[in-house]
Image (cartoon, rainbow, N blue to C red; front, side):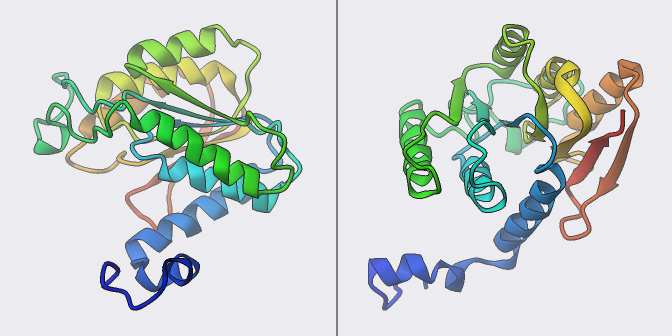
Length: 231
């Protein structure tokens, strides 16, 4: 029905809610509530595993809604843009993680960067640019290097959408020293049977992290797990 909509392109974009299913709309609601939690926490917003960048664009627009004058709130996305390359023995063999799945093509990184710039330009203080960064490559390599080179960074919010054991563990270990009391971590597949590696990585890292936390399922989106750092 979207493809055959009897609306002009302008009207279609303005009325996009006509075609947003509840399974899509719920992500807007969840991310909005989480942003309310972290808006008073200093630090960057990070996503590990961006795919097409839907969450990054959503974060930019939530930033513009909840704290329009905070251009220090940088948004950072990590992805290979080439899809998955392999699994470890802690992961469940599945077609979900086959080689190349979730690939966007390497050229998509430039498109997403421009899309983020356009959104930023249409928000308050749009003339002030540079609040986004996309880091391409293997998360097991890029994330530890990125945070080791930026020891000053504080992380207010981190979205883990990697699914597999090794990249999830590498990202968690790298970001952990940068979390502060009140920082929120959102795990996309922590209780999904197809992605046991994510839960294994979480349990291993926090078993030795010595960081108190609270974990809860999202009331609107039960497959999502929310971890709040307490101290």
